[in-house]
Image (cartoon, rainbow, N blue to C red; front, side, top):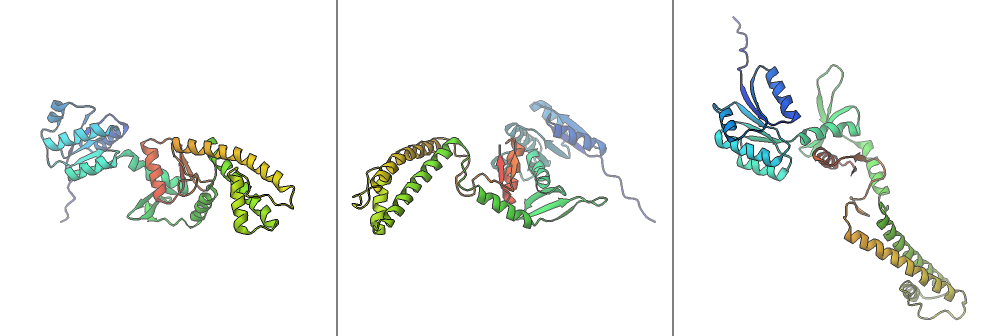
Length: 303
């Protein structure tokens, strides 16, 4: 004699929040024949009434971290052993809440959406891409088969990412940076030109470098070569040009020091020129998506 499995017990849930996520969760639970009480913005008495008797679980689905934290603490005070799912964006606050309430599960819509957006950004065949347990994993959905998870190996993408980073080094991205680089390169060009000229005139390299540095400093060479009539004119022209280049360099340097340092001139914080992802909108989802792409080793530009 075989026994059919018992039907699942009708469970009761309390959902707090007036977000689209809260409404979708309520609809899914009701489709599963569960009892759901949806509270949009309950006060203390309304929340206490909904928690009597204690439900099987409580979901606090809000966009406001402070309000979500308050409701989670209130629910835990009213029923210490009821499982709680709460959406909190700030990871520091989420960590402290997990430490204080072990029965609480903390997530956020941004954490859920970021992998689903990162996958199609890199490969249309990837439904989701996430860096978990120290390694990137991709979720792929094939026709007629359930989703499968497998390690992601971006061999071809790595080369494109590296080329994009290299091409972005020392590339000006605004007017102040262009002034700084133009002035710096101009002074270096004057130094190199004067140094090379003095070497061709037979100067010792150390003396040639010393005189070239004096020209860049607009104090002139130590002594003009007696057998050259063109060099004094060239040195004077170099010094006048250096005045302009040094002014441009100083203006760009001050602008960069006083302005916000959003990107760098050299290093990993430069703007990539190829093989990167542009994220428009740095809200909760956009910020999490940028962080996920950076953990995957993908260059990203946030606007």
